[in-house]
Image (cartoon, rainbow, N blue to C red; front, side):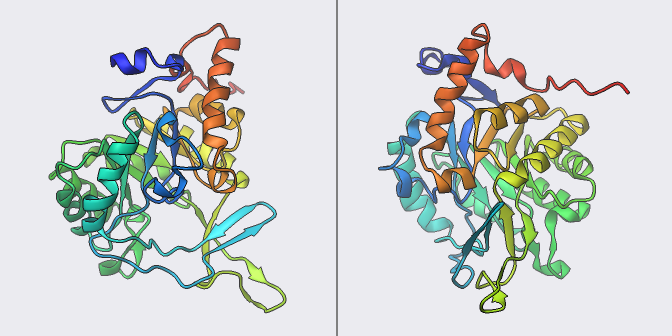
Length: 316
């Protein structure tokens, strides 16, 4: 364990993930805080385990038309359209800022592409950047295959991951959709192609309607559903991936409490990422760090990482 992590105020929370030490298991999910600057004056991001950046593509993307976000009783639906300034601006402006502002929190870059070769091309342009790993968003549509998600096509998934593996030695984390018929099988395919870890889950496709206008609530029409209702879906996916592989897992979906974090860890996750919960309450991730430390103290002061994968399944 690094000296800075071992001596930190929440040393019980330290996690080794793909050879990288995180001071605690709490991350901000991709898209939650762009590249950190938007939330820097609201929450102390450097107290978190890390930040997963907003999506990064080869070229700038303007994204989906407004409105991009709508709330409903069970959570949120969004269609941002993977808007981002492109890899050059991220490399030259945003990542240097993150290195200066977040000396203790780790940086994971969310990478997107619309053809299999675009993923490694983005990563190649980030060679030498202050990055601790890459999260491959394989829920993107493969434009050469009629818009089928990369993660839903084993051949395309294998090509994306192996291509990324060929250009970096940094940890590769593959982010899978909860709509996959066999999410455990997809995880195995990704690992066999060179993935070091899996993150689950992405949002679920949905439609919210503005009844007064009789039109979709989002400018794009459909969107990704997130929020509290996604918690059991993400926890189940985590457990399925843990049974299918032995690589580390990032649990994502519906986290707004210490109990939710613990569910993910017990199901098999090593780290968790907060999305909608942090959008609604930017100080939630910091409170979760404090709450997890209190939980450890109340439970004989053991390391939180000892919980990972301890789910006991019913025998009948």
